[in-house]
Figure 1 (cartoon, rainbow, N blue to C red):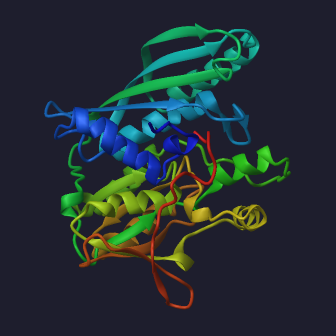
Figure 2 (tube, rainbow, N blue to C red):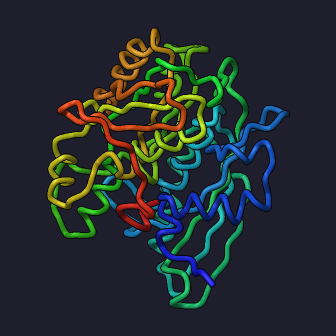
Length: 330
């Protein structure tokens, strides 16, 4: 009899296998089978759900409350929706400090206001001391289909370009640095809503925008692999083209981590037609924090083959680890 491990929830191949074997095998339907960030219903609703279990709960650049709102809003955006409503369910461990809870909920309120969404329903449960790791937050998001945006992996074609909206890996690397007691004045989580970035991208690309995915667990390389795993094309990704800030790069080297696989909370990858790629990157670079937006690869005719090109031009297959580099990251 097999058992669930931490790696089954960390965004790697074990989690993907668990979802396919235990969830899709039971609930398979046209909306769920592509495993989108959010489901676009025939009625034009975009729906997403997420749970947040990060350690530490307060980190440089945000906290679990801000992360819960941002992460859910971003999932609606990535599915081609305009976010409007959120739910908020709390699982609180007995003995949790009410002052800390208040700070977290204040952050949720402020972030929701910035994102123009309302928290309209929820639930609260308290579990015995030692059984809840302090606080878990579950959110669901509801939005409406963005006019003129049609996102579908089936639209991806050979020679399409893969772009990334900003520098990679800052959330995961900053969390790891804090856990290890490493001090940095500049390295912080990129936790932020992607609303403006998506609007700029859509304005620049129009119908030439094929697909998007935010680079949460698994980082930029992990979510790009997921995009092309069941797409009609393969992909070549350029390791040297991936933008990484100097502080994130230094932290990655010190910690022995690959920034391409480190989680992001304010960064996404998108697939666009080749003739729109540079204008999309230029539009993204006009936003503060997105100055390092870049083209990082392209779609190829080799369906199912996803490779990384090294600085020396060598190609190797992109492989996803069984678990994430860092557990309990979002």
